[in-house]
Image 1: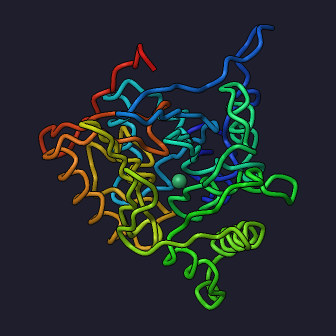
Image 2: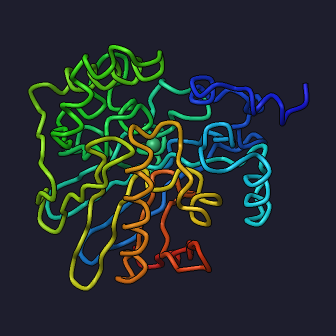
Length: 318
Ligand SMILES: [Zn+2]
């Protein structure tokens, strides 16, 4: 079967498991040890370390509002291979004051072997999961909290799980999934398991809550009901960790109306994306994305009807 046909017939569940990726696609080649995929930068007095959990391919069949030809065209315009373009899965460690916080926890073993690299990259960056004081979850999807539990135990044994109360309620309420497909049910099970493993260390927040000095939650609803970003501010510097505002950057920056099958409410997700893109452009806010090319950091510029990410520079002093 032609590769293109194969990819367009893979169901979302198969996609999430990394199906369709070339075998050994995560190996770096040669015998040298893999370098840690970690990049450190400063936001005022805070130190932020972007860490990779790996990648997955998200093809046009997972998207709404664009066909395969439109997808291929945007990929080629961005110098990407439409058949293999890797959408990143990133997490971000924030060191601020006495605290070590991490935004999202990667996939763990939930989504196949091109993913689940966060623990190795934490180690490579010299960050001990036992020293993490808080896990700030942008939402309770498996690529964001699947890695929070490893072999039935908390990966971050001393961390509070900070999560939107709206998302906690949504994923905890079985009646939301009574008529849902297998995928949504498995997502709900995973979320419920994470919530129960961190049960006595849950710290839910509502809306635009202050999370820590200089860190504020920003509701970005649609992708999930409680999907939230985290705004960092220190001195004159700022960064919005905006989670799943884009999943396929070459497509959704150019065409922000394109939604993904994982959106709980696609219409609201597209509306939220339009609003936040407008805001980060007009306020010149640097963003960090869960699925933007590693390390996931960029400023955003208007580009015709759409937008264009402008890579942030390497921080030589961090
Ligand atoms: Zn995601």
